[in-house]
Image (cartoon, rainbow, N blue to C red):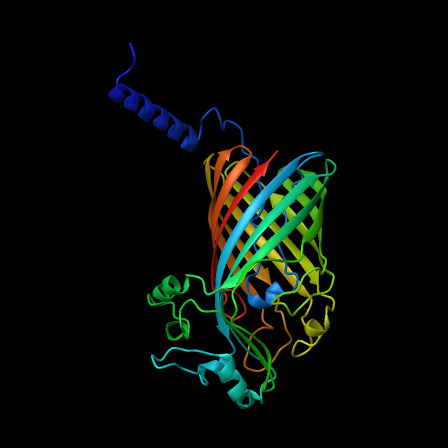
Amino acid sequence: MPRTLPSRLRAFALQVLALWGICFSGGSELFAQDGFEFGPIPTREMFPLYMISLSYQPADPTPLGSGRWRISLDHMQANTFEFSDVFQDQTPRDAQGRMKVTRAYVETHAREYAYLPLVFLFDEETAQTSLLVRRGLTERTDLWMELTFTSLGGGYLDGPIEAFHKIGFEQYGRDRVLQNQITLVVMERGKLRFYSDQFVRGKPQDPMLGLVHCLLQGDGLTLSLALSLKPPLTTVYDVYKSGWDHSVSLTGKWAPSHDHLFYFGSGYVRRPRGNEAFREFPEGNFRDGLGAHFTWEYRRGSRIRPFVQFYWQSGYLHPQPMQKLDRPSLQHDLGLHWYFSRRTVLTFRYLNNVTHNENTADMGIGLSLTHAF
């Protein structure tokens, strides 16, 4: 006899419960073996100035194996509201008492800032979507390529961030700025060098090319050399084009036990001169940089694996009055991996700054999907 509707519903419910048990059971047959490791989180700095050239980025030290592939689609939405210290005293306001910096204001009042070599104000949200393809060239060497598309706008995170700061984590000016607007200003000794309040949708960035070669692997420890190159094929904000930026880093993995996995690494970033606008950026161009990362991943669960990653980098510009762009920064990337299978993972993460030197994005929310085959 055909089953009645209630019996079908019961059968469906049992199937759902069985699937739920498979997904979240630590000892299911499907996940009897450890899942594929996907490496450290590809944290990148989302501060507007770091969009122009290469910044340090963690690399997975584990080779895929000859002929194997890994594809990742990553999206990060980051909010930035940072400005030179001078704006704490010289802040234009609208009728509601909120900060509003327009091109007309800057052009009229720029001479009031002539005693300072550099003045900046960045209020925007940056969305970056990246496709990362990695292939095992040999058993110890991988090649990879990354394509990134960037959107700039007012976004939607200003309200939640302002509400969060009311709890007690105050950031000067957060409750005085117009929400969900985009304003980018750079002044040099009283002259306007750059201004933009235009929305950007899906603009291609310079591609990234890289190589990872395993130097040491055994007894739970993996150590690799990572090289990357960013050819100057596009402009940022339709103005700045970097040089042939490149980096070299040492990246590693240590698994002292089944439940704990650590990633670590450090590297050097060289930023050669780019186009004329890049070379003439105020106060001596951008400096070469150093970066480092340290990651802890908890692997006791077979499907859900939380992690925290710390991301450090050196300052970007030379020391100047009334700003902190020469100082280093430390950020955390906090989130979890959700394994759909041994070779497919969905990752959610929350990026935030630990130091408060007005030289990092305020916060970011990221989502990525990775598959290895």
